[in-house]
Image 1 (cartoon, rainbow, N blue to C red):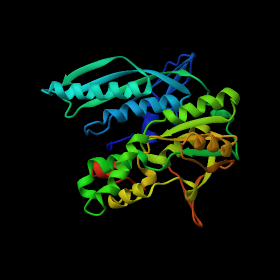
Image 2: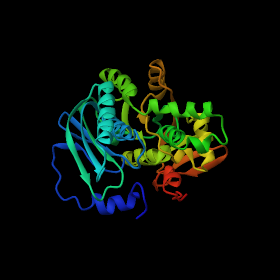
Image 3: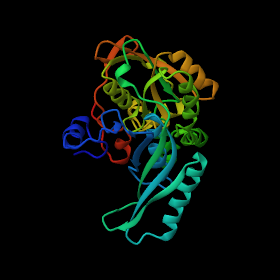
Image 4: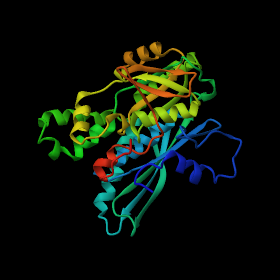
Length: 333
């Protein structure tokens, strides 16, 4: 198997199919397009780090919390598992724990437990975060029909552009001014969906049908998240690439490494299917969150991206474009 996220067919065959027992109290569970679980009034989700750089525990924390939000919850607690290589310095552990605690405090979520261990088979710190939330709204994938709006918050390749600017700065400054790359690095401040949550909480109080489904954009980028969201809804879509929010710095960083920004990790961005996308966008923008209607659902099962006069079709995600940079592993197209 290739490094990175499992292909959809492998995930179905080797992870989902072996599951034999299902508790009827779980109303939203592990599936294509479902990255969290709901039971009763509780929502939970888990995430882990993929590659190491100082501070990457923030990725796992944000990803777990974002998955809870996309599954319909408001996060209130996390538990953390930290695996370290043998003979790691205590200062390394203390730094990871302190950064996690500061991030949790910022989000007002309690660190309620976890596990820490030094493991001979681990070659770099690996952090897994499980987030817990209170359910505030229901994903209603079965109610999604044709001609509904697909809304995207923030912009393409958000996390990928930021992390490349952080860890590959020496390479990038050979082509771009350092100040330009530092702007892209600041996009790391936008990798949380907590701002979107504050808007969603207010909206769903008044209209339970305004938002019918959601999916966070992370591993696999925008195209991967779109595919998974539409798979969960069992519907097609038509999206116009000119409507998708972008940042020029992220496009330039992607071009330097010859990777597709639309297939690059976009943690911090959220996809929503709405019955009134323009209103949802206006509420996000009023809260200072960039957002746009990027397309509509269709009665056809085709999932199209319009690029000028050309129609391109989405396919199941095959990994993240960052793998080409960090693992030397190009993503099949």
